[in-house]
Amino acid sequence: MTPVVMDTGVLVAGIFWRSEPHKCVKAWLLGMVSLVLSEAIYREYDRTLHRVKANEGFDTDLEPWLALIRKSGQWVTPTSFEETVCRDPNDDIMIEAALAGRVGTIIARDPDLTVLQRPFGIRVVTPRQWLAKLPRESRRRLD
Image (cartoon, rainbow, N blue to C red; front, top):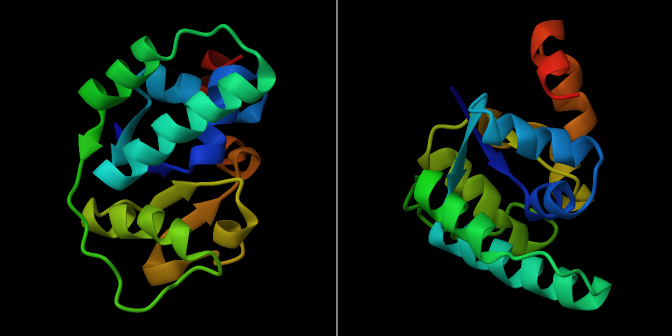
């Protein structure tokens, strides 16, 4: 199982909408990837999921999702950067977790992350780019 860090925008879009991010979330649910996260990322997932649910008027029960993330996530304790790496310093938590978990890929929609391309040798790819690199058989499992 390949470890990845999934940006909040990918996870949230993947839970609420059927799109490329949904296929990334499905890959995690099918055990094709493991989700690497830190306490800071989990808090951001929680906060953003609840905010989007309220703003969009969804009735999705988020507790099973959050429980699954908490239970199945590969937890890391990152060291915070002394200086910011991303244009948006709040996004540094994704890179910090990837470094702590020795993760080679961050799947992100956030342009403040995708503009970086390879910080510290970590690939930052969009859901579309990540899906395109999967073998055909794996892509079929996600349809």
